[in-house]
Image 1: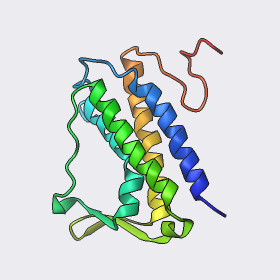
Image 2 (image 1 turned 30 degrees about the vertical axis):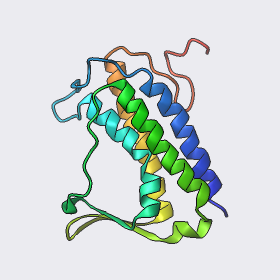
Image 3 (image 1 turned 90 degrees about the horizontal axis):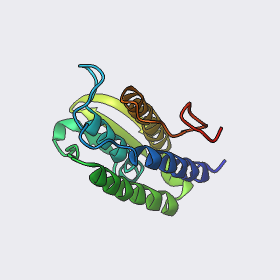
Image 4 (image 1 turned 90 degrees about the vertical axis):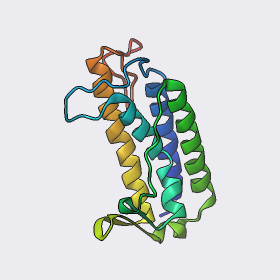
Length: 165
């Protein structure tokens, strides 16, 4: 079974849904967190948009070692920056998924912290985890929005805020 068409379609669907969420990002609330152990709003949203670049990163590398210091999280300060980064990351991954071949998904990709192995996947599995992370972190963003009384757009169907249903 060819999996690339499904990965391409899912990335597009997650892009379309996330774009609606980012359009609602509240100005002046970057440091909002619902709990002391929760990420602040802007770092959470930034992490979410960075994940859209993971399929590209995973297909063009073999590993991510956090101990190496090569990964530095992006620092953003406003909705415009979020939306710009989102478009850039999505475009890279979309292009990558449109140019690779099915057999390219068989390569290995690992995540570690020095000698401590965090994850070991084939590239298909790594991309699936990335897509799952998009869903997970967008849902977190939805909880933050709900707690701030920001009406939620639908993700996989209507929300209680959808007036069209």
